[in-house]
Amino acid sequence: MFFDASYIRPSSLLVSSKQTSIDWIVHLLLYTFLNPLGVWVYAVPMYLRTNDRKYLRFGSYVVICWVLRYLNLRSKKCKYPRRKHMNVMITGGSHGLGLEIVRRLCDSATVFVLDQERSAQLEPLATTKNVHFLQCNVADPKSLETALNTVFGSVGQLDAVICNAGVRQTRQTLHLQPAELRELFDINYFANVQLIQHVMKHHRHPNRLHLVCVSSVLGFVSPRGLSGYSATKAGLHTFFMALRHEVPDSVVISTILPGQLTTRMFEDVRVERYFWAPLVDHRKLAQRVVELIERGENGFFAFPLYARFIPILQVLPYSWYRALKKFSRMDDVIEDK
Image 1 (cartoon, rainbow, N blue to C red):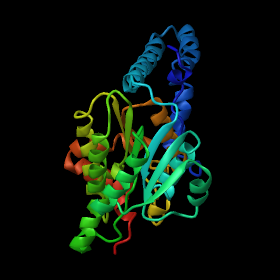
Image 2: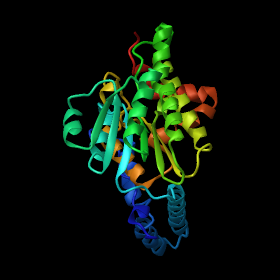
Image 3: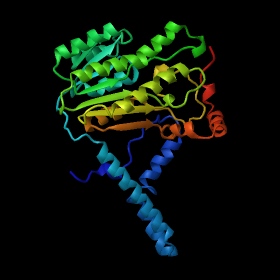
Image 4: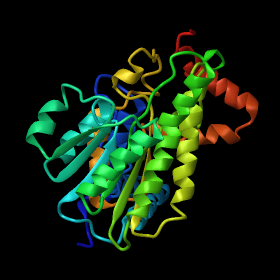
């Protein structure tokens, strides 16, 4: 269908509903004054009242922005259809965001979960749904290869692969032992590279294959105490960014760049600027990931609103960068250990 109502409706809000934030305000504006239909309810009466064309120009600018959004959404979609019943593999699917993604996929897909332990929350899904758990230490190349061989020995092809497994450092990078730092990179970066290499060997064009990378905005800017973790996410983001130019157009790559999630990994992180940097509800984000897979959308997806502007920090004058970083108080969110 050429016309889809989603083209004139803003994307669903993914931030936590527990705090009022700039994201809620912008979302409201996108339904009213910044909506391609709603803007004219304001612009036309104001023009008739004042005879000032600036209101018509404002309405036209809003419409142009939405037309560009429409063209962007159309260009993101893969032209190859997905199979009705998908085979999906996800790393780190026993807890947090990964577990929520599994819950939303298991009714319409066969899901293979690669993780070190099967959590109590995953247990009922693994016994009653199309969920298969494979115990795997993704930091160990042999363990990962064995799990991947088991998956491809069970199914002929995969329709989606979600690189979600990740760990966080617990001390400042300068205090980490070499083995600890290597393990951090093995899990957060090298395991994903090995996984994609193995999966691509089994991909047969023109079947659609969707690769989802769960990265982080910390790949662009790091708070004090997480430089090692941020470096792994920066490497992962850059790898997938370059990979999209090395694969056939039947391979869809979606890179997810969230801010702080409402998961246990960052439950000890103190955030004071909730208005500007709200938490991302991992359950809502899981639903968005599933929607991206169903629609076959390429691209980068950053949440919440501030995450879309974080890369700009890297090209600002250093004094501006320091001032904005100080204002955000992001260097105070992790206790020194």
